[in-house]
Figure (cartoon, rainbow, N blue to C red):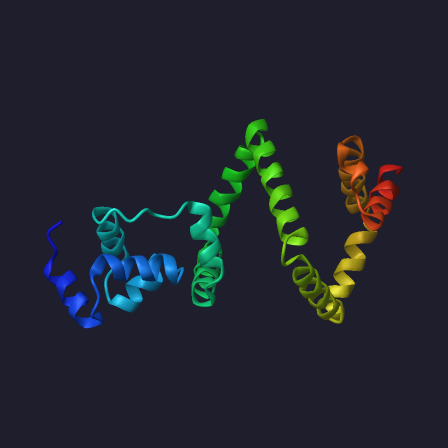
Length: 196
């Protein structure tokens, strides 16, 4: 492959062959394209094109998603972007209508449900499960100290609509294989609502 002037410029700047440099940053240091582009001063699309020409295999979507989730700056940028988008009434309406239509499709609903269950299991019972549980516990303790949050939760859980939804959910869970693997606290909670 014939190297561009920009490639040669980067090689001179970092004192390393461009292919070796990209492989080191991408694989050895586990950096994503955005991070590499910031470090080299090149747009991420150019980095992706160079890697393809140099025969450097790209990561799978799940690998990219995991690495992005570990980048605090990326998480903050994504959060800010989602907040800005969600403040748009038209976007919220379109998204709501789209999801309602998709949820009526059995295949989509089953796919999402299965994916959520698998992701939840990996999150809570995986290698960092105890750390996640501790973090969630501390978060709920802080939330419960907020008077407004506590009042809203009490009012919601006392409503007939909440009990109806929980009863329907519990009966579905009780009819599945879940009851054979449930933990005592969850088992007791579902059993309580399933009997309603």
